[in-house]
Amino acid sequence: MRKLLEKIKKRRTFAIISHPDAGKTTLTEKLLLYGGAIHLAGSVKARKTTRHAVSDWMEIEKQRGISVTSSVLQFDYGGYRVNILDTPGHQDFSEDTYRTLMAADSAVMLIDAAKGIEPQTKKLFWVCHRRQLPVFTFVNKLDRYGRNPFDLMDEIEKILNIRAYPVNWPIGIDGHYKGVYNRFKNTVELFEDDTSHGAKQLKSTTGTLNDPKIREMLDEETYKNLCNDIELLDLAGDDFDMEKVRNGQLTPMFFGSAMTNFGVKSFLEKFLELSPAPQPRALQDGDVIEPDNENFSAFVFKIQANMNPAHRDRIAFMRICSGTFEKGMSVYHKQSDKIVKLTQPQQFLAQERTIVEEAYPGDIIGIFDPGIFGIGDSLSDNNLKLQFEDMPVFPPEIFARVQPKNSLKRKQFEKGIKQLSQEGAIQIFEQKGTGLESYVVGVVGVLQLEVLEYRLLNEYGAELLMNQLPFSVARWIYSGNQKAIDNIKGLDSGMLVYDKEGSPVILVNNEWSLNWLLERNPEIQFLNVPADLKKI
Ligand code: G4P
Image (tube, rainbow, N blue to C red; front, side, top):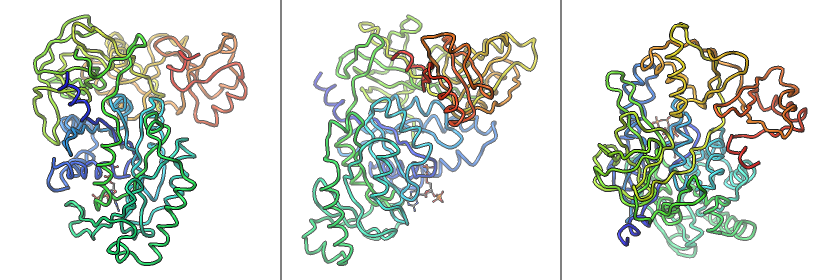
């Protein structure tokens, strides 16, 4: 029990959320550098380049091995065991990206200092917010021209509706930042010029504001501006409130530059101190399982199918929620109501896959899946036989009508579409009156459509006819008056479909069309995700 508690206390499992190009790969690499998991920056980056330089499908297939290993990175720092979950961006963006956040205990929101909050950051933040996940903000690229830090704070508060507490504050002016002021310790950290182009750890000098060596290093104006900024923050800013951080209402904010390593170490240390250890997990029956429960439990949040049809091997990624995982253990699998042996358990230390001997709550392991696991599945000790709450469904933004090219292959098509939907690879909708031959498929990233096409052909032998639809917004609709739904007004350019539970969903072109509907249908409630239906 004591050993388990110790292991839990020292674990931190988080995801970095950001818009492409904000510097996620660079920051991840620097965290690995400071964690001693790599010795020279550049290796993670090189991998990313290989990963994105190729886009044709056969190449993506080859790349699968790479994205498997990058699904989670683990390293040790200052007594902590750190698990960073990968949330792919760019063309790899998919529902997996959202689901990965279900396995995290906190998130680091990375923002480009010149760009502020960008669309993908907003979407990912929204998913964290719904889960009340603590979010820590790292404002990156401080080494070059960026927006005023007060403006960035303001933007976070206005756009994301969360309060911000700067833990450190940049010293200097645009593009000529010299260091950061630590508001917890009331100390100044000034960085030496980086001569290694960020390949090595950065040296710095630390002291109080009155320390003569610090005063000597700052010119009069920079010093005065810093004092004014700090005074303003102390007077007008929020107080630090750990309870609000835990509930996702206040984001501790850090400034730095991943490329030059500026502020990375102090961020990492403070983040590890403030971020939560593995948290209790909600169960289907409304109860929770505490991580220090001695009985093992885990849920599957991602399945990585190897696209090679000759192998068909799949890895199910699971997050351990309680107890201790031991290599070769057999556990109860709720969805099949069977005892299964967890074979070939793998963990991903920095860049290498290793076989896991033992793992603890907060850790992610990849298990060889003979085709029995689905996303959201629950595994637990036979004493528990528990079921975690369902994996949420996220609002799709890309839609296509799909049907089999050859009607003789309809059976295979139906089977494939349904299985892939169950697996969580796509969401399917039906339009009433069109028969069973065509479905509307909803996804959050185009990669999911490519995967659908490829897997239907290679695994089920059904070639697809796919027509992308001009919609980008889906809303689950509800009304106490069924007639209001049957006679929905103003849907001329949109579409009414039904999800696999039979709940009605409208698809429209954009937010503007949605507002048009909202105004005309006061009796109908428009909900972002199906989970909101349960709250009514
Ligand atoms: P991503 O994973 O979020 O997509 O971003 P990535 O780390 O690949 O960074 C995107 C670009 O931003 C890269 O430039 C990277 O070097 C740069 N970058 C990351 N952190 C910083 C920073 O702190 N300061 C500055 N000035 N730039 C930063 P690139 O030109 O696309 O690639 P590269 O040629 O530098 O490798």
